[in-house]
Amino acid sequence: MDQRGAAWDAAFDRPGLWPSERGPRAGVQRLDSRFAAYRDAVGLDPALEFHSLRRSYITHLIEDGHDPLFVQQQVGHDHASTTAIYTCVSSDFRTRSLRRVLDATIEAALRPERTS
Image (cartoon, rainbow, N blue to C red; front, side):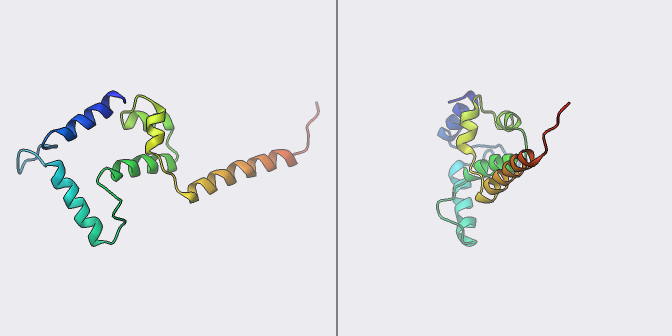
């Protein structure tokens, strides 16, 4: 586990996070329960959790075309393999990516050979 990942895990062992001007800290359990209440109110999958927002953020950066090294550094991972665990690209993104590569391959194959 990278250093920030260890810090993230250690933070969840403490009773609260994120100091606030309205109170000393917002507790992790409070954040989780509030997220769950909103999730349930709008009918989202009960498997979604507060930490899902981090996975979504990473996935959206990758799908929007940001350099994988930038994304890795943005979220504080020491290893690209850690970032890959968080990335769950959509089937639409996979289809678009495959289509782009196939189109380029077909175009290159149909291009007449140049002789000099």
